[in-house]
Amino acid sequence: MMKIDIISAVPQLLDSVLFNSILQRGIEKELIEISVHNLRDWTVDRNRVIDDNLYGGGPGMLLKVDILVKAIKSLRRDGSLVVLTSPRGRILNQPLVRDLSNYSHIVIVCGHYKGVDERVRDYIDMEISVGDYVLTGGEIPAAIICDSVLRLVPGVMSDINSANSDSFENILLDCAHYTRPLEFEGKVVPEVLRSGNHKLIDEWRLNSSIDITKENRPDIFDKYLQSQKKFK
Image 1 (cartoon, rainbow, N blue to C red):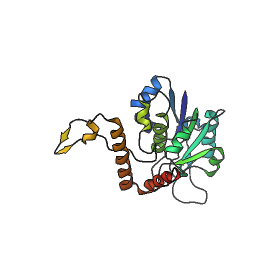
Image 2: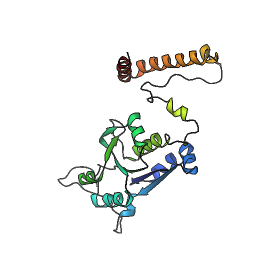
Image 3: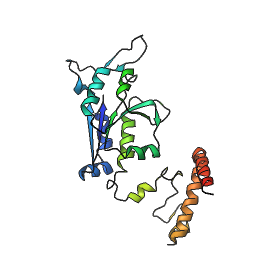
């Protein structure tokens, strides 16, 4: 079983995202476990304070080192990976997601407000960012990490081939897909997809993936071209 513990200042933000659909089925099958913890549960003062002003002045509030470290130490175990959601971190991509899926236990610390006291980083194994933009807190990145990682746990998805054919799994973006109706406002499903010839269908899907990647993500397309040169 793979377990993810999430430490959050606003845990209610994660409930509707993590405990539905595919992940919920994985929980019911006892393949994965997700626990969302309220950072305030590790406070000892009456007001349950988890943040404070910055030394040296300046706008914003920082999550306190003593509270966060207490939470991390209580959840960490042998073999755990402790992750901080942070704009400083490695950009989350599919190779990193696959690496994360090899751990049996991950603790995710959600940044919030202005971030965390710098000394918290002494207790962090990895920092992860989901992109170059600003969010209110780390809860949405934490949900993205959970969803992308846990769906790769064997048995969580009913059709693992669906996961293996998703965008980014094989460098290229996913190909175009169609379902009923056959015709809509003059646009008809490509004939090859209705031919039953799986070799031709595979070739069409590969070419579709190449075209879509070239048009939408030229950076990824360049990586694809480089990878093809290695095999020639």
